[in-house]
Every structure is written in C-alpha cells, then in structure tokens.
Image 1: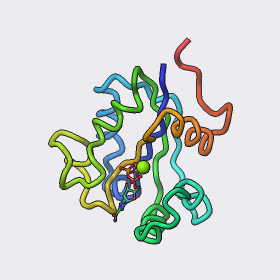
Image 2: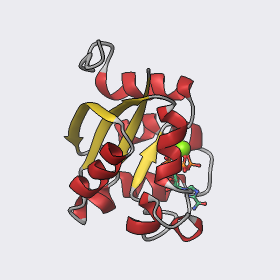
Image 3: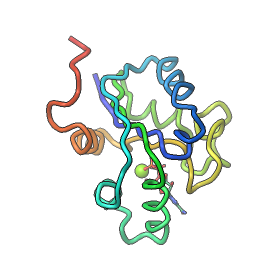
Length: 141
Ligand code: RTP
Ligand code: MG
C-alpha cells in the first residue's frame, strides 16, 4: 500500500474548503492516516521547496506558502501517488480537467489549492519532513 503527502495550501484553507477537499480524497478511496494544521515559516517552506530554489517563481511561492496556515496530510491507497496527482489536476488550474480539485477550487498557477508528492521516492521524503519517522498511524494492518 502506497502513501503520499498532501498539502491543502493557504488559499484553500482561507476559503474554508478543507472538508470539501477531504471528501474528494475519501471519494477516491484514499485513507487519511495523519494530518495537522501548521503555519509554515520561511525555513520550513524553503526546506520543502528547496528543489525550486533557483526558479524565477521561488520568492512568490515561499511568500504564498507562508501567508497563512496549511493543512498537511498523509494519504494511503493503491497507486495513491499517481491517483492523487490525477484528482488534483495539472499545476495550472486553467488547464486542469474539469472535476479535478484545482479546476474546481484553485484560482491561479501561483495559488493552486493543493500539493501532492510527484513520486514514491519524494513522498517518503516529504512524509518524513512533516511527520518524522514515527508520525503516521499504522491504519492498514
Ligand atoms: P506542487 O509541488 O505544489 O504539488 O505543484 P506541482 O508539482 O504541480 O508543481 P511544481 O512544478 O512542483 O511547482 C511547485 C509550485 O510552484 C508554483 N509554480 N509557479 N509561476 C510559475 O511558473 C510556477 N510554476 C510553479 C505552483 O504553485 C506549483 O504548485
Ligand atoms: Mg511539485
């Protein structure tokens, strides 16, 4: 059984749609096996997005991700890394398929409502970054 890291970004938390996004996860058959709300600071957001450090949008990305609280969760399911990216929709919500989270809830490329790990390897790194080695409840036995 796979796990992936999901973040409901500051725009979606501010819009009060955590529950609607959680419903999408549940409708897809994913289990939420860990969750917490945190307000990222520059250090935590910078560490998370270190791969984008030299990209032109990095400054705006960090400013946005630290602008308010986020909801961070670990999702579990079969092939969940890829399936979660599918129900999120493409990075730019204007290009996202209708019925995806970003098409339905996101405003722009910069403020695109959700994050999802892009590979199994990065999922493991990102889960440990936010929840540590023992921070995820073993719901599947
Ligand atoms: P995420 O990491 O947040 O799940 O999004 P993603 O994989 O779909 O996109 P990624 O390439 O990893 O970029 C991370 C976030 O940076 C912002 N971005 N802005 N202005 C731009 O050209 C641009 N490109 C990316 C987006 O908010 C994206 O989610
Ligand atoms: Mg990404």
